[in-house]
Image (cartoon, rainbow, N blue to C red; front, side):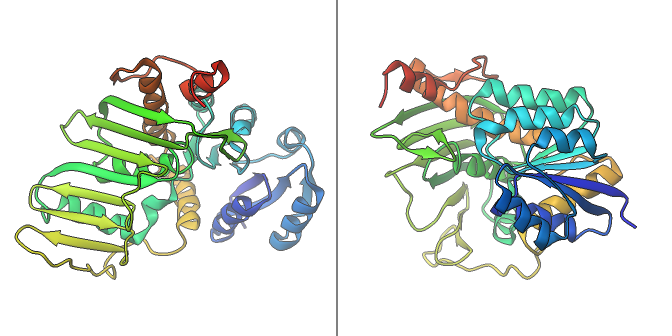
Length: 334
């Protein structure tokens, strides 16, 4: 018999992905789900054999005695949903990324979990991907010498950028960032899950251990790969023609490292849920902890703030809004 009970807020594609993680555990039973769209919650109920469905997540939190809650909804809804779940007496929350549309909202929902002693994770599931784990190994085992710079490209800083900022921290062992300088442009209206994002941007930052990061978005693409770790004796690329490729010092030939020795293996989102469950059972920090998500999220909003101030931003970030959204509202960009 399962030890824990889980409830789902949001029954779309990402909700089903989280549910597969709970179903992979003998410790958790999904007992309820909520979604304002009747068809979505009915399909979810049928697929995962969930007997109790709710149109309003507040009603589910009130009536069900839950241990785990997954929040799988659009970005602007996260704050209220996470805070309500954290206040309901549960043990843990697994929330979709990015955290929130503003830095203040991100801090508020995280603090609600801290205050209620609720474990919260955000689905930066690429930390469980074999190619990213291998890249981290190669970056840290001396194969490419000492890390000097980590680079990446993606469509935008908020929705995709949260993944790559998190991966940069992953490669650099979650070291704290010292400062950020960046620029953004808004050539037209572009929304991701209801929230406005930039059309192109640039974020350059330095960790306190001296390693530098560079993320470009929009039309300025690294092309052919998504992440690059540059060391004193070589380069590791992730996401090109091969999952990982390695260029050693003194060589002109790229190598394709073997991934067969990398663990854990399996669906990344499923593994993220299983890791959260294990962390609740053992008391350790989960791999996708809210603390780590806050580091990646701060880089997003610090880059926006740097563009607004036209200046380098020394962390911690003290503004509460999203400088991007504020500049669009004021007509300063876009």
